[in-house]
Amino acid sequence: MKRKVLLSGKQLELTLDRLCHQLIENHDNFKDTVIIGLQPRGVYLARRLHKKLSTLLKNTKVPYGEVDPTFYRDDFRSKGHPIAPRSMNMDSVIIENKNVVLVDDVLYTGRTIRAGLDALLDFGRPRKVELLVLIDRRFSRDLPIQPDYVGKRIDTIVSQNVKTDLKEAGDKTDGVWIIMND
Image 1 (tube, helix red, strand yellow):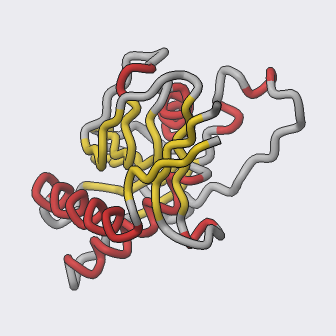
Image 2 (image 1 turned 30 degrees about the vertical axis):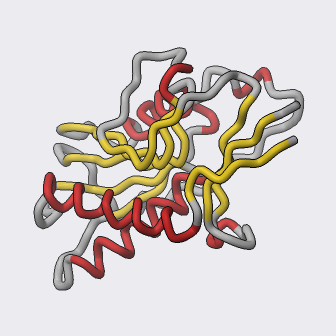
């Protein structure tokens, strides 16, 4: 098994900074916009983006929440082991008639995003939903889902995997890797 760096720790930070500036460009003061992280790994990215946005937009409260799409997936019963849901952090978040930016680490088949959209609708009907992903694995969709904000687009084959390492998730370093199975 070989690993190849897609984004080093420094490149990851620069990419997140760029994504924050794109969000500010499109959503100005976030008065009508909410950032929502998708469990599991999209939450760590969303938290980091939220922190950066709060720093860049000093006196502006950027609404933030987290959803778990586990039980909304179309394949959750086909897993060979019991699944464990993660927490949802939507207590003080209102998405009704708001713009929602859904955040995930890797867009592959689109199934997690579809499940995330279903989970999101349990909390209200947003005006608009945009998708922000760190990595877009372009030619592998099962569903017609495309991101609005992309850190990096890559072309991969089925035998390759993309792994995001984030210190917040307990990893030793930050970075994004492509894993090539021999």
